[in-house]
Image (cartoon, rainbow, N blue to C red):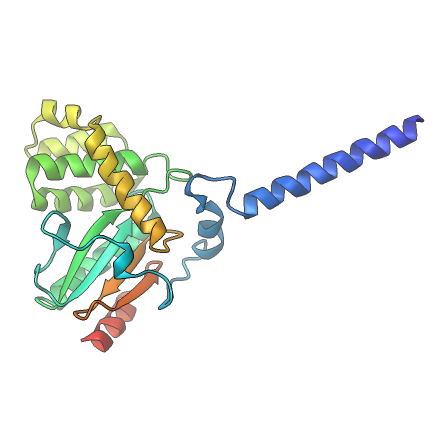
Amino acid sequence: MNQTNNYTITISIIIASLIIAVAIIFSGGGGNDGVASSISNNFKDNQPTRNNEAGSSSTIRPVSSDDHILGDLGAPITIVEYSDFECPFCQRVHPTLSRVVEDYQGEVKWVYRHFPLTNIHSNAQSAAVASECVAKLGGGDSFWEFANQVFENQRSLDNDLYKSIAQNLNIDAEEFNSCLSDKSIIDEVNTDRAEATKAGGRGTPFSIIIDKEGNTTPVSGALPYESWQQIIDELI
């Protein structure tokens, strides 16, 4: 076999390898949880969608007093949000949902669950675990205050920030530090993430709106206030 043929075969092998690699990446095989390519395609420009075919209340656990709930526990409309503390769109929708709960007092409750996209957000998992430790040691109000402050300081996510916020919330430092490596807390976060994926979540924020009859309306992306208002008014 001459040198020209060897060169041709080598180039062919390289091209074939590149084609296979690209196929793997776009099929979702190149990232944890298989969501990286979806996020890049669907959320790059923050194009939220309302999809009535994906997600179901049967694929997520029932809301209970163990959840992080803002609003009246007995409110007929429930927004279950699967969120990522490092996601800029989650940061954007966070005050929007606070406003929704405030404006629809007694009619809408907001449930916060975790969906850390660890393949693209290196600090999302640790922030979620820290928030659960604050909730465990300080209660529900402390969780929401912690979440608010984490989103306000999203560019500075690390253990020093979490410890500083916890200290300001009068959380015992030694207990907090010990909790950060508690496997049961880590398992809680992982359970939320698996649940979000099973329910159809492919990016964050991913929410499921549940009406009083148990009917569901999955929503992907950071909807503006007016869009939440329209959906809720229709359900009410």
